[in-house]
Amino acid sequence: MGDDAVVRYSNTVLYDDHLNKIVGDVLIHKDGSWSKSNGDEDVIEEIDGSNRVLTRSLQNWHTHLAMQLNARDFSDGYPLHRWLNEAIFPTEARITPEFVRIGTSAAAAEMIRTGSTFAADMYFFPAVTGGVLTDAGLRGLIGGPVSDAALPSHDDAESALSELDHLLSQNNENDLVQYAIATHSVYLCSQETLLRASDLAQRRNGRIHIHVSETRKEIADCKEKNGLYPIEYLDSIDFIQPGTIFAHASWVKKNEIKIVADRNVTAVHCPSSNMKLACGGTLSFPPYRDAGADVRIGTDGAASSGNGLNMLHEARLASLLQRHDHWDSTLFPAQDVFKLATKGSKDWVAWNLDDVRMRPVGRSNNRHIANLIYNGGDCLDVWVNGQALRKNGATLTLDEHSIIEELDEAVQTYYDGLE
Image 1 (cartoon, rainbow, N blue to C red):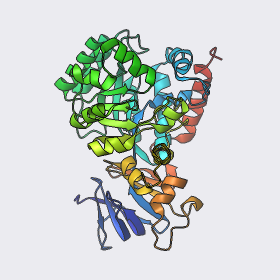
Image 2 (image 1 turned 90 degrees about the vertical axis):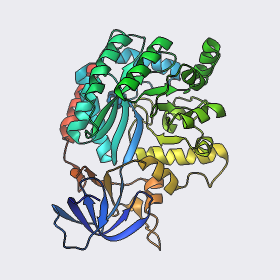
Image 3 (image 1 turned 90 degrees about the horizontal axis):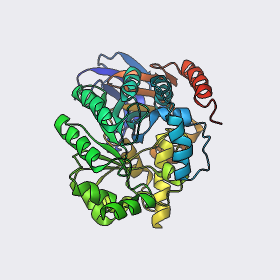
């Protein structure tokens, strides 16, 4: 347990990593641990916690953060192939490091405001994204995109991998932000590119992030070309490294789920994105759970998901969708989905109990988590590594008003001539 107590919350409610409820005075330590307070410890700050409930922060495991620029959603109602080819790809052809900085700043502000402190991202100009998150005090696993198609940031996969080699060499486990390799997909990366990315991950002890089995067309095309479905194919060429992230992983067979579990892969459930783009299928949680696979939740990009990064909304949808799809109202109760949405977090969020959405608290004062998941909540405080990113409902590490002004101005430039 850390010795450096940063803040004491008095007369509060705290839920620990296992969602055990602690009532009283608690200390939050710089290393992310917590302890009960005797009331006589030296702390930097003391906060009246009577109108707060403390939980671990939310973790967003698949994002395209700078897509906040696309959140105006000029492509609403497009099927996936039109959305990609007529909206996203032409728009992204005009992306610049400055646009990425502005879009990521808006994303970071939204993350902090909604209680998230980590994003596993994949987008162009990853060093820009990494810098924004670092300055905001957030954690990130920032994947630079790799594709055989020309990228706004690189002419070819070789150039992209060269940049990532440099970024991965700078990874320090003590840094809030780490870099990763974001091979786009089996349909935009050749086998040679996939293997070079995998070799780089192994050599630099880095992680890989890839879209996998998102649509029925993707798996049909892969089967026709390679005689195998996407996860089978990636396994057959020894692409998968421990810690690889499979975003979506929806259209899969049971043997592929076993591969995910056996290879220590993280599969990311992105319900709002899959539903909004009508992909026809979403990750089915029970077989992943039964296989012992690691599953997390992600929002995807703002342009493809529900237009935002609110992980409470995403967790709620994940819970309801699994129950609906499996005809099982006992599946994914609020505590289970909250554990999944906060899994691995070292950080803390204080939610506002004076928010009507958090009431009633119940006769046994036990409805906090259910209220958060099913009704949402107002984030008052966010603590990362002993630093307050948000306090009393105001973000401290970013200037939201300046970001809004920059975002509005950038969107006008960004879309000029496209509509």
